[in-house]
Amino acid sequence: MVMSLFINNLLAAVRKLRNKSGSSILGDERGALEPHSDLVATALAVIGFVVFAALLSRAYMGYEDRSFALENYESASLLAGTIAEAPDLRAENPGKLSAPALDKLSDPYSRDERITFFAPFSGNYPFLVEIRTGDGRWQWLIEPDLVEPGYLMGKQEQVAASVPVVIELNAAESVPGTLTVVLYNTPWV
Amino acid sequence: MVKELSGDESAWADFLISKAALILASVVLFAALFQLAAGFKEVEAQEQLDFLARDFKTAVDETGAGSFSGGTQELSYRFDENEVFLISPFGENIEVCVSGEYVHLKAKYDEKSFSAVRPFSFRVLPFDESALRGKLHTEFGTDGREESPLRADFLEVNNFLRVSGTEEVILTVNEKISIKKEFVYIKGSEGVSAFGYVLVYQ
Image (cartoon, rainbow over the protein chains, first blue to last red):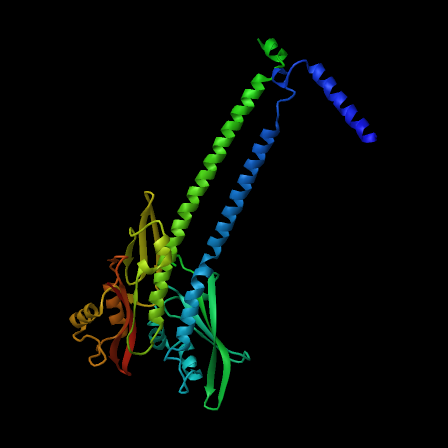
């Protein structure tokens, strides 16, 4: 009952409005029906596009910033694996690194030994090698002589990769540790 | 005239101006969208070329990493067996330039030039073993094999080989590229030492 009364009232209102406007919608030139919704829709589409483009460029720039680490981790990992098996570091027991050899290579006066040690590598990637025992008691740092001492400890972008190793401290004692290669960013890499 | 315009409530001018603005905005929006899509294609092509350069560099580096103290390590690399190469828009128009320091891939697509460079991690020489032995024999009198080691300073030998390998060599993408690790033996005061070099040739 209430529903039918509401529908009747609504129809009456529509009829009254149509009679008042006199003719069809096409004949109405007052501009009251000029829709602005398409302007709003276009503005929304433009805003959406701008936000999308901004997000996309931001993501790409983020990727570019991190591309050094992403691309060169593989090289650092390969270098770490290669150095862990280098004959210059090998102890008498297979699969172990020799602590005396590490002492010698990390000695600032052993330039010739370091030149031989870094000989297989191209020099395109400046890197240093850090070996430390698991308990933190011993640590060795091998830096190439092609750069000034301390240069590789600067603020350049870097990526590091580690491999587990066993270090033979002496004939009676071997300890687990890690060999880390820290690869530095240069303008040509 | 001004009075006429202000008194006109028909809104046709408003209608036409707003529609023209809408058409203009749509044209600009679609142009920007197409530009973005074209930009994506370029970025994707560059990424594919970068991937190919990186893949080749990895193959060379892995050969350099293997067999540290003797014996030869060899592998053959083919660009046309690489999935990314097959789907890349460049086809066979990729030029592969290899020097002792880097690999440089050059390509053209849609009248635009693309380029990707990746440096090697290990010492590389862009020629085959006979060329290497020949150069060493000419310069140092022996060819640096295990049975005939060089009697020279390592730095001198290394500098000579580095200079020999600076020139770019152009390789073709649809042929096999050989990557081989060879050792140069040098006799010093502490005995004979072996130094590995990766040879890249076709």
